[in-house]
Amino acid sequence: MRPEFEKDPSRRFIVARPIDFRHPRYDKVFLTGEHSMPSTGFDTAGVFIHATTHKATQVLLKDEHGVGTVQEIPPVVCVAYVADKGFMGVCEVSFDGKMYSWNNCYNVMESYLMKMTKHAFYQGWLDRLRV
Image (cartoon, rainbow, N blue to C red):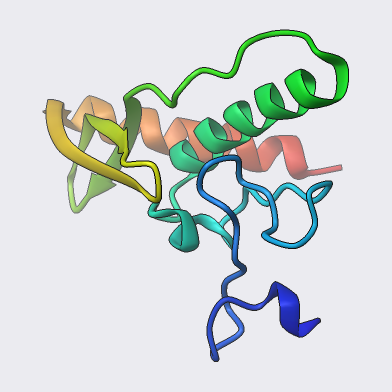
């Protein structure tokens, strides 16, 4: 990996500017994957990757084509499971001008049904990858 793309000595993460999810030195390179989330203040969960990719797309369309507006990232909803139950939660997202943070996470629902929902999502996602 090229040194300018490394965030830390472990070489696991890449630096991205939290304001627009671009590489600090390459304006045409957007970084919205698990590899760049920690440098923006987010966790590596898929809901954050989805939300940041949506915002990066708005930035790209506005800068390159002059269309649309760039909106701030709204609260994110996630479904996960632990042991025999699953839960659905909502986390508020804030940006202080330098870094994102996700806080005030609310547990909306906790039940076996949520575990089945998460499992069904994974099964459907994996099925789409099969040829």
